[in-house]
Length: 201
Image (cartoon, rainbow, N blue to C red):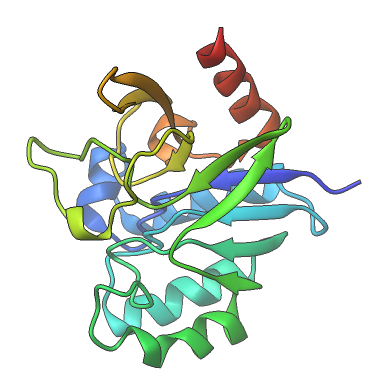
């Protein structure tokens, strides 16, 4: 039986991020990500990647796509700001075919899934929050209208935060699946479901 995983913000070949994660070289960083993915995911499993495979240049993107193609699993991409296929890049349409042919079964700017009977949204960006003090890419963020969101982008070690919805400021769960919060390993659906269930209590 296939399983489902979520992950984000691999940042392959990204020296600044590798150093932030305690690695002296990008090769060591990327090898560790590969080891943990390969030890967790089976070929029949689905993996939803919510963006930022690498730093974003053309050559780095092609190498990152090849890296992803070598990992087990059926991969789906919800691209981030560093992904050349994200709509905020003027030439994003030119990259769609490459992403699909080389590494991914699907590529879409956001997605909707159902976890334990509850609809959730997937986006690279949370409703609120960023990796620094300024909210960036606000025009590419989904509006918070009450559904929980699974996201990356923040590089936080925290797996959970909240946004608010409506005049009553109802708290809405945000589940961060970036590798910084999951020991550099794809997050299993069951663990994400547990977070959403705890948030509902």
